Length: 150
Image 1 (cartoon, rainbow, N blue to C red):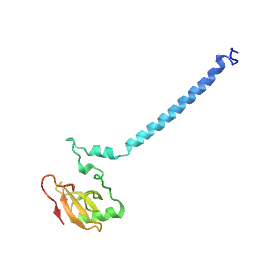
Image 2 (cartoon, rainbow, N blue to C red):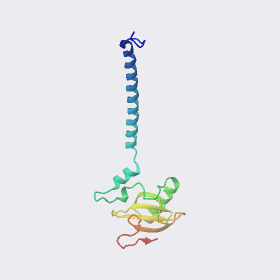
Image 3 (cartoon, rainbow, N blue to C red):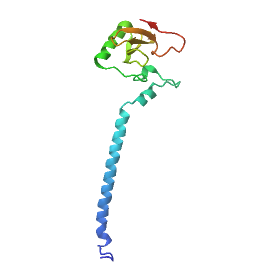
Image 4 (cartoon, one colour):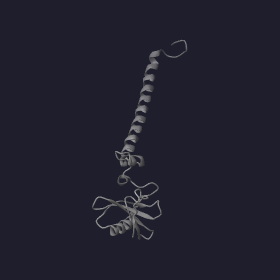
């Protein structure tokens, strides 16, 4: 025994190894959990990653690649189906890019790509009636042109 009344250093060595192994195991477990959550987060698209993907090389946002417009919500279910049907009837042979609520006055809007490659936005009221068709992505005209009314 030493002067403190404890066993010699040899008896404490296995305890230290067990304690160190326990801390190492806990650290590895915590690191694995953190790494797993980062991988899962990277696999899930987010608004910021959608915006980054939608940014063209010129630094401008490509509205066709965005998940939805600012202040707008993607439509799902029967509402999405009704908006899609009305928009396709208004602009035959165009394909739907997305359907969403409208932050600029209409109840709903459908962003579409026409057969010639140009974009058009169909605006609808709450009863799914087409109220207007606007060239481009439905924002205010930037070049002085205006959309057409239905």
